[in-house]
Length: 165
Image (tube, rainbow, N blue to C red; front, side, top):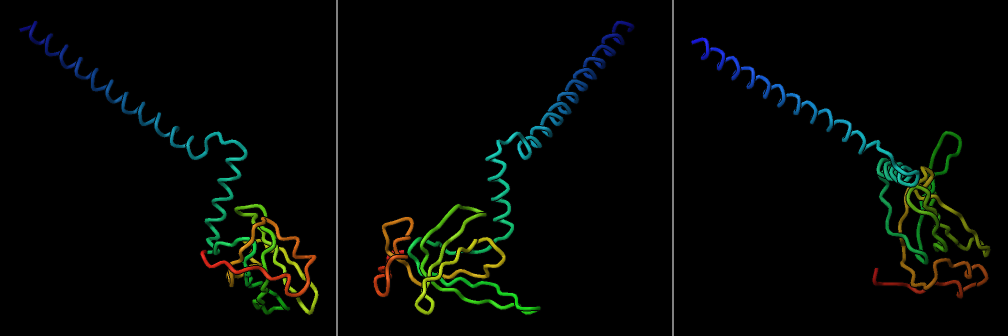
C-alpha cells in the first residue's frame, strides 16, 4: 500500500509539473506576443517611413475627395475668402501649368487670363482654404510643366482637349 501511495503522489507531482510548464509556456507566449504587436505599430521606422505614415494618417483624417488632376487640365478651384466675419467661396478657373510635391504637400499652379493679364496662383490641395476642386476640361499636353504658355498671347494659349480620361 505504501508503494502504491508513493506512485500516486509521483503521478500527481508529474502532472502538476507538466501543468505548471504548460501554464508557463502559455504565459511566456502571451508575454512575447504583446511586445511584438507593440513593436509593429511603434517599432523602429526610418525617418522617411515615419514621415510617410504621418502624412498618410493626416490625408486620411482630412478625407477631402479630390479628382484626378493632370497638367493641362482646366480646373475650377473654390477658394474660401474671409471678409470680416463673413466667409464665401470664390471660384478661380484656369489651366493647371504645374504640379508639385505629393501627398499632404501637393500643390498645383493654375494660370488664367484676367483683363488681358496673365495671373497665376499656387494652391495647396490639402489646405483648408481650398473648398473644392472640379475638373472642367481635360487637356492633351506632352509636358510636365507648361511654363511656355507664359510667353504666348491670345488663342495660342489654348490647350487641346483630351477625351479619353
